[in-house]
Structure formats: structure tokens, C-alpha cells
Length: 318
Image (cartoon, rainbow, N blue to C red; front, top):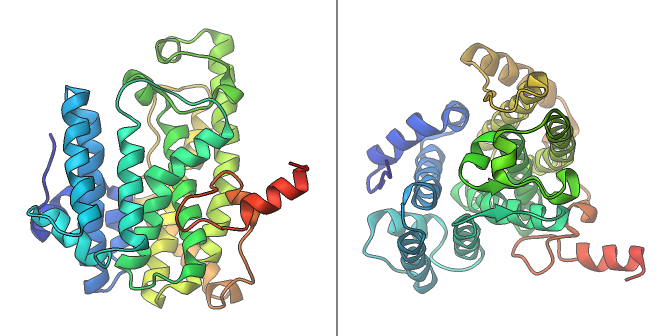
């Protein structure tokens, strides 16, 4: 059921019911940041639900378009959108990220068949890297140098989602695993794969999770831009999500089983993450720079490392 989160209580319910990992990480935030992050999560979840649960794609596209128009004009009669506009500053990079998120969600309407790494990473930027940018605003740290790292954390999480949800996504007519990894498999073939196809999909999951690790590492290097409590919360969210990836790997070729991290494992993962990262200089000092190779596919997208495409083209002789 699509849940419109007009009040903080509504947003809190959406988070608790649908975002177990983020609800756990929220415990480490102060009150203001927890409230802002909760509202932002509920907004993002609402957009996903419009795309996933509206029977008519044209109706879904129109609903998303109305929200996008409100964001672009910086005003809305919808209390949920009004709250998000306030969090994001009413205009500028935060709002641009929100409109890019809607572009990504809109691309989910109808069948999805991604072709290559570029289309995959650009999709992950739109539906999750943008959320990283918006979280910087929710946590009062929209520092330009922090944004590429925030994008990377979102991309790492989305790659984990894609690896985990291959079977579920195929049931909705979507194949986010690019053809470069699995060939031109159609969603119906993923739902009932041959033994060879199943092995190929399991190998693709391993490749996606290996890719995700690079983005997680970059995302965690940027946590030092955040307030101390917020960086702890985001570290917990990141490491708990990475733990989902470990459980996906443990499933091997069992594509139709959904991996999750139980509460006891969340507690252990969080404790190890905090005790392991707190003594590191990288938890306190800003990184020397951002790895441009991570954003070689993100040319022209807001908050991305602007030098990445130029460096990639120069290195490749383009």
C-alpha cells in the first residue's frame, strides 16, 4: 500500500515498517537529524511505491511529474513535499538531487533491461547516489567535497540491493544486472533459469558486490565531513548494508531467497564497525581527494566528481 507520510508520525511508521537497516542506524543520530532523515526516507519510499504499486504506468508517471514540478518551483501544497523542500534548502543541489531521483524512479516504469556498467552506475546514482546528496543536507553538511563520497555510499547500497533482489526485480519485469555480465537474459528467464544461467547470475552477483565494496570504501572515507554522531550512524548503516552483501554471497545460486541481517547480527556488525573505525585517522580527518575512476560514468550529474570524466577520457585516449 502506498503510504503518504504527511506528518512526522507517518514518516516514522514508514521507516519502522520498511527500512529496518535505516531504522537501526537512526538510533545513533541526534533528535533533529533523526527527524529530518526519517522524513527524507519516507519521501524516497513514497516515490518507490508510486512506481512499484501503481497499476497504470501513465498514472504513476503523472504523479511523479507533479511532485517533480513542485520541487522545481520550490513550493507545494503537499506537506510531505514541503517538509522535504525545507530540509533541502528550497533550491540548489539538494533539490536537484531530488528531481534526479524522480528521473531514476520514473525509469523503473515498464520493463528495465540495463546494458552495461555505465547504464548501471548512472541508474544507481539516480535512485541512490542522489539520496546520499540529500542526506548531506538532512545532516547539515552539504559540503561540496563531501558530495562525491555521499554519492558513492548510495551507489554501494544500491548495488547491494540489485545483487540481493535479482529474482524479485525480475518478477516486476526488471533486469538491473547489465547484459555485459549476464547476456541478454530476459526477466522471465531469470525467474526460471537453466543451470548455466543460474551459475551466470550467481557470478554476476559476486561481481556486483565486489564493485559495491569499492563504493562503500569511498563512501566511508567521506564520513568525516559529517557531525560525529551522524558519521557514526552512517557508518552503522553502511556496514550493516555490506553485511547484507555477505549473506547474499552465502546463498550462492539460490536466487529466489532473500538475504537479511537479523537484529543480533546488526548489533555485532555495528559494534565492530564503531570500535574498528573510531581509532582510525580517516574517521576524523578529511580525505586528500576523491577517486575519480568511481565517477567516470557520472559526467554531467550533480554532485559527482567533475574531473572524473576528463581524467578517464585522457587515460583511455578518448
